[in-house]
Length: 429
Image (cartoon, rainbow, N blue to C red):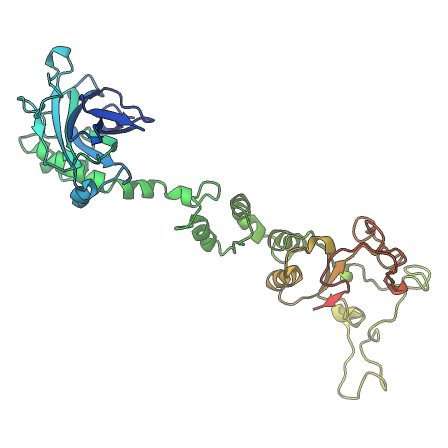
């Protein structure tokens, strides 16, 4: 805190330093209130706080604001009387040079303990009080509290503003000349600064709003939702706060992977909670010749179309067909795998209701527009030559099915464990 300008909170962790209580006042749970008396509470009392000192030089004490229990530490001027209800509070201020001999002498048991010369009285029931005492090193604050004998207002916090760092410095130079009106003008502008201080703080905190790790969460408002709107990034209701912050922080990098295998896998992991295996059959396709690039009965297959793209009398009509040449030569051989990819997800990860539909929704939203996909759910059906890729779909079941359960031969020679799953067959898009 700057020793020349700033503010003081007088209640620090339910402790009130420099507080002197009258005989009928108590501190209860950090709140200054009237103490018990008979079957109720005392009807009046007084207390004093001080000396408060922030510098060895005279200080311009601007303002004192009190907060009543249950109403926060900011009370608007227009709400003072309603806040106090049937009780009454009046504040007083006194400034001195900080020497013990110049401190005010008061009797807090009197009906009017702050009537002596030097004390400046605020309006009764005002909880937002301008300090009209002359600038000096030390400030004393007095208060008289009156109640109805049944309940008592509780003063839970007080804030004191001091210094000359006000909006007056933004005025033209003619208004900043030292003179008789300078003190009044600075006090007036100081009140404006306090009223707009919250807005200034929000502006100063604006960089935090763009930081996924520091942006406030909760509703209202949900700043994480606001930040996701800036990034056009969809937040999922199933994410924890930590997940949302982590994914938002990586959203910009993730956008650079859109349309790639790694990007799709990451989107599926985030929104559907599955670890997908994605393959592109076209990457494995090649023109082969028997004995060199292929083994008869193993890697050989029928082509989806003739090599030249058209054969007269079978797949071509005179004047209605053309031969493929150049870069398109042989493209007909790959029509069944071109612009197509396969997505495999584990059955054991599809535990959320509608999980498979969620996987499809993510794929439809994030895949390249010109592509199609096949979605396959991997169950624990270890089948040699069909489902036997180590580390991917060679899944050994946890145990056999109950006795008497028949398992068709085309579903595997090993008995599958009873794992709930929406589908076990490839699902073409």
